Length: 359
Ligand code: CA
Image 1 (cartoon, rainbow, N blue to C red):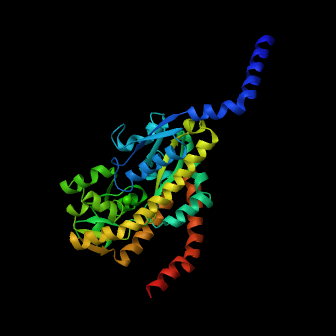
Image 2 (cartoon, rainbow, N blue to C red):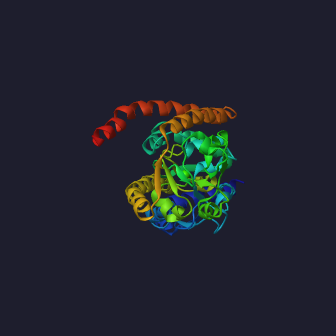
Image 3 (cartoon, rainbow, N blue to C red):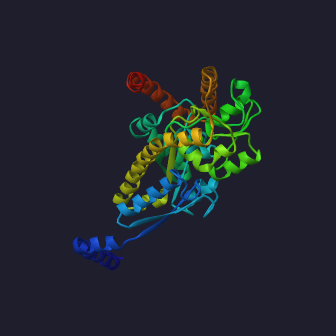
């Protein structure tokens, strides 16, 4: 035993002595390959390309030491199986939206979008400086996943309909693709919410398998051709006021990375989060212009009374859903307290300024 200890000790000492010279070379040669699976069609505008951008950033920032290869929905696993695939280590990263996983945890939905919840700016503030990230980590820990915010869509559109929405009764009986908590609100109002991955929306609306859909905003909706399947385009997206799209990482794989690569993964996610929001903000209005003036889409605002009633029902539904789950309750309490103070501040900053600018 003593002899073995001595040999082991000597080996450690010799490595330590040579570390100053040998380590940089060993580090340069170390190469880790990760797979990123996504819920988006491969290279789909802003969402798929956002996933590509994140993968490229990590690969470039690490000097190729951590190379991430992206797989679109269905290439390696189907869109809605990526959570399980990364959880069990089939892939090391996933790119999607947390409300797709409400079947795993109701609390997950708070980290994508809450009806009448936080805007993009507020969402990032809650996640990065209001305790949100730590709660998200707690929600994903039982699944062996580490979450990051990887893109924000800003305020989405209300959706595509083949009839006007004048009262809440017009939502009754409606079979609509609308995920997460917004979907639960529609169910409460007598509609049938359906959760479909992006790649299946157009064909389902066109064939009449669904009556209505929401997706993201003009830039993404135009790319899907949703104007060819529905006539009325409603705003605002009350159900998704600043949706965070996520990246999640297999926890074991993440923890096996050296500290600098972990920092690169987290920092690249923050950069991608900013880049995606900037891209959509830059492109949405031009796409809306094309939809309205070139494709003759009927742009409609939800009536104020409909929005007021939707807010009332939304607040009830959200509170009720989390009441069944202690962790959901904890997330809800943090989220709603943050929303209250963010709203107070934004009343005298963003809202006051936007009103003033309009003149
Ligand atoms: Ca959406």
